[in-house]
Length: 116
Image 1: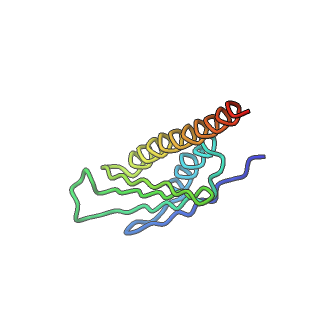
Image 2: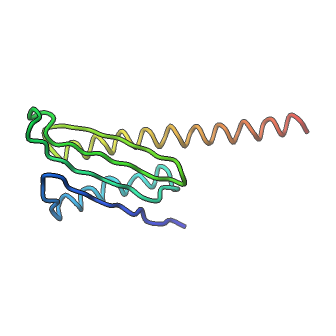
Image 3: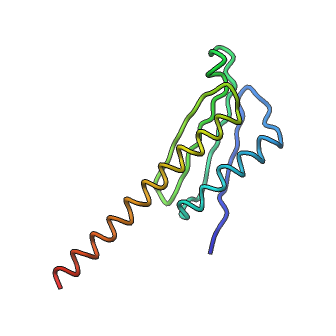
């Protein structure tokens, strides 16, 4: 049973176009396959004029998964590049967290088997 991720997209100092919304939904929505307990995602897209060109497009994503919070932020010259980098970073975070849960569960099973 797979449920969809509720994604909230906010834009600061820029108009969030349908193309940007679709791109964010595609990239962030794929994270559910790495950790299926994700409930909500808040994506904040910001255009900062006072920063250098390399850091002018900032993306901040906060994921909520049954009380666990995953957060990532990235700035680059392109909004699409920032979204790609954030998605990759969150993918690594989720894989690492899931592996931690799996190894913890396996450790608990081994200790129960040893006691028996």
